Length: 215
Image (cartoon, rainbow, N blue to C red; front, side):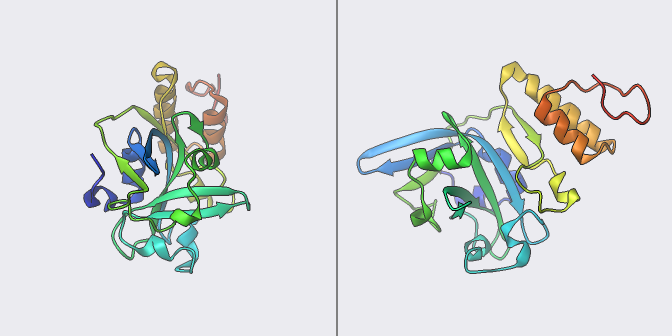
């Protein structure tokens, strides 16, 4: 079943985990390809210093100010097309970056695999016959972690757990993510939490007050 307007009306930080397990659908002539979404990131408006809309409306970001349910496709580093799903109400510039689908990890790889280019920018996902998203009821477990590639953003926004990834490894990643979330709530620094997530280290109680992380 194709996702309806009510789904896209949600804020990006709600829609991003909600998109996990959904089917990204692409039609090439008479052929249709459906790949399950496995990783997303939320970008939440002008106040989010990691968001393209942080400087306000521009020719490129104008689509983000439209009502949710359109695509925002842009070129990154002059070579990678990046697929974003606009969410939220009109006037609230939010979007979800689709970072991975089954068989294609990475936003540039998935757009190459599905031939998604800036020609599909502003595509109406509610009506398009070329690109849309379906819900077949799948709701996989996932982990939440800091977004990547946003060194320019404020420390507070870099620390937000707005990257969502379908769990692998029999749920071990989910356990690690819950512990990471707990550490963030306890005031553990962003840098330590990123190290925890990327290295896969176990989280235990620190042995000394100055040591935030110990094996």
